[in-house]
Image 1: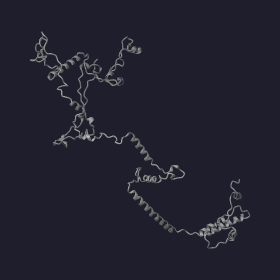
Image 2 (image 1 turned 90 degrees about the horizontal axis):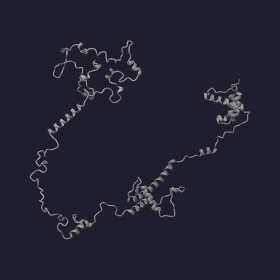
Image 3 (image 1 turned 30 degrees about the horizontal axis):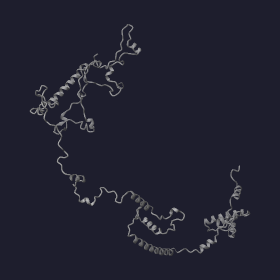
Image 4 (image 1 turned 90 degrees about the vertical axis):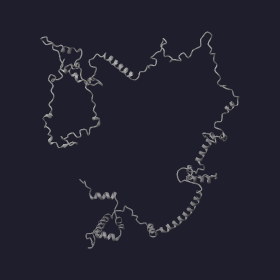
Length: 448
């Protein structure tokens, strides 16, 4: 079925798509070299000439050359399809032969001499600049006015500002890198100062305002100018407060004089309508002391008696059962379990028939509610004390003693309230109100 390629097919694919391998590609030597051909011819024949002391590498090399020689013999009849490999570079070989490495130490010495010379010049220039800068304080950081960079920019502007026929820039291609010949911050501050000078005086706003020198010799109690003019006028006695204008106090003819001292010998108003003295005139309308307490108690008792006279129930104590904060039907009272499920008149016809049913004999059969409990007819007896069956305490076997040395029984509750919170230790007790005899009626009391 020819599923695997034959040697003929592999050789055809190699000849069509591959390249031939020569001895020059393998050994780096020309295949026409007689030494290579002799070696190939000798190893490729029936009898191989191998020295007894040949190593394994030499034997492998001879075998490789022999196999390659046979391949060259096989393809010697074909035309050469690959150009000769250009592995020779005479210029490179001559340059490498005549190459002299540079003397890096001598170069470093020359460079060091140049740097030392430049360093001395830079040191002299810096000393000169430092001497000029000692007259003014400068700062090497921030954007302040005395910052070193801003100071040098200002000096450069002053030095180049006189040349009005040239433009100085850091780049010929970008206008944004031109040297600014004007200090924009200074112009802005000058404009703000000029604008503020238009509405602010040179003196500025000072409060309190300083006094003129003439006021330092002025008396603090000196009268005002108006008062001085008033004091210059002649004095008139009581000119601002003259005597009031009044009428004559003499009564008209035929009338007595008005007596304004009628109650001179008694308290004014302490008389009754008939003119007699009123003994209760000085009695206060506001009660105090024991009299006030007695009056309050009497008023309270009168109010309670008035309320009790209007009570129509036997017991004034209100007892709430069930859920008093919402719908009482959700949690009915236990006292209502003895009542019938129906209250009031029955509206359903079927239930009326059942409640009014009769026997065939004509006897009425009424529905009655179930009793509350089956134990209400029995006499109540106290439960038996379980401690009666326990072993009696024998004081002779007690080994515990209290602080006084008295023998005591084994204490089983020594930390009864150790981990109990304070809120659970607080007790609130209320006196139980005795029921009225009228309240002790109904099925729960065994009466109708």
